[in-house]
Image: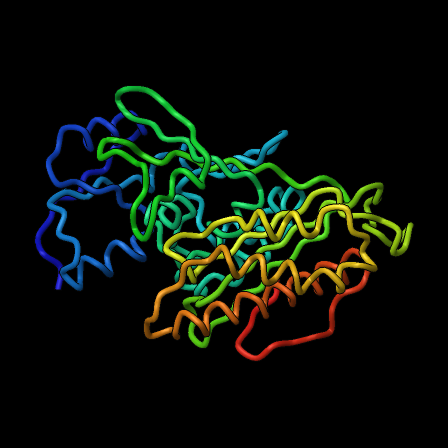
Length: 310
């Protein structure tokens, strides 16, 4: 049951920030898929909700050197955007598998990131795209890496009078082979692995033109849902740089073990810490196998129970 609250509907981001600065115990409200649930459970009890859904500037999607996604863009809009599919196609594919269609129709990108739920598909994937978030407040505007913005479970660097305005992504170069694999029995993922391999000398068709001689010039591996917050796995990435596509299978085991060493899981209803570490190793290998197949111009035929491949 919801406790009484006052709903405010500002017309601009500046007005919203002014309300957040002036009102005691106020929270921004967009899609409400997580906020309203926690309010119904009694875990959050804000006396004021500042509705930002109607602020036009927060709903923009723009291209350029970096893709800018406004905070109130919904998962459904992200999934269906031709601009997103052109610049970051894997983002659109992953958005299509967030929760269910009812959640995707109202849940927003900014709300997902600002809530810092450790079980976030988008936050995990965005780390491989050098994501930054823009925050606005009465004091001005600042931008910081997503890795610094998310501090822990449901904890971010956002001040109480700040509003998350947008997230910027750096699209991968042409020829990058990427994959996102998530595992979960229910809609909420219990593991998410994002892999991106930038191929040296590959054309738009990836490694197809040069076969197995094409090498990995840069690698991104991000792991989500098992640690307090999603994070990159730099040691695993280092294992992959310089190897050819043909050699990926040989180093996948070492990369997976390195990735496992970076996670900090806890025993909970989703499984023991040891089980989660083993799952990280298994799914990093699977994600690399899928990315390697895509680099060769093929699609892996492997399908995994309770797993989603994007």
